[in-house]
Image 1 (cartoon, rainbow, N blue to C red):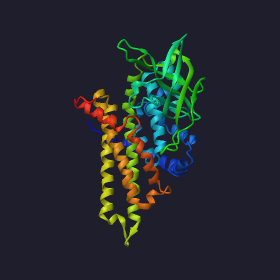
Image 2 (cartoon, rainbow, N blue to C red):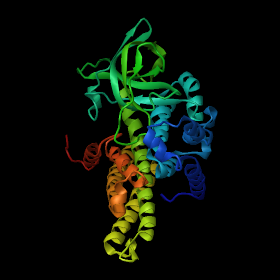
Image 3 (cartoon, rainbow, N blue to C red):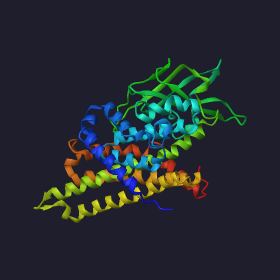
Image 4 (cartoon, one colour):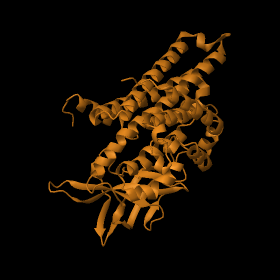
Length: 390
């Protein structure tokens, strides 16, 4: 099968790039400086249809005109000018919409998806806890069924899109009992914003992604209807792992946008900056580093869109899971390296916040951590090779 983007995908890329350069790029530095979540811009992204690229038209989505590859294109192009807005889109669709779209009941879909797809609302994905990051099976948040309601106690951390003015819900994993073998039974439950006892704590002071919304959450005697169970009871952990497979490819697309930005900034700067009366791009030490950026961008893009194509083609889950892990691992680590190289090309100016390269440098590191660390991706790849890695 071919992984080359279609003409329609390339036309779509140009439209998203035009939007990103007009509506996001001129303001991204100020948003970053102010730690400002630009709600109006997010809603414009909704009006452009970016949140509905994987949703059927019955909920206001793109239907047959959209696919997972289109979402990756949009994330790459938004991330090329601002990683904060790129992760806002990635999390809104991959972690907010897709669990409900994939596992929700007809009633849950009708209730929540129209506003989420339109960008009028956002949803969070509550998996990570203070003591359960990569070891998500160690979830301590508990939900007990009492008189037709789930009574929830616990906490979550590092949750994106969880505290905005338009956040409508957070889907959380919780222990809902014990299995016969003694392992925890983990289920997924929809918790609407504003539910008594559901507290969105103060936003984090982060290294990067300053314009992205991220909070810790606490749940104290939170009661929601039994019907808010998402998917099958006891399948919450498996559902969220499937969700993360998609998310890993989307993060890879975000990393591709970061690498591409570093490449373009470095080429421009190396052609303008002169030392010893010649542009620094004539120096092999600089030119070779920028050549490496080109290789990284091409390799990361190829791996990412291969994985996206496998998803759209409905290839076996094991094949897609491996491709997703490979794309996420390479692209995220390449993005971190790319920002280091770009900062070096800029020299002292790369250390100054007046140049976007400094912002991309800060934003890149979390790409190796979110939605499965590099160590987790290596573990998945090794297991796929038949190695008995723990």
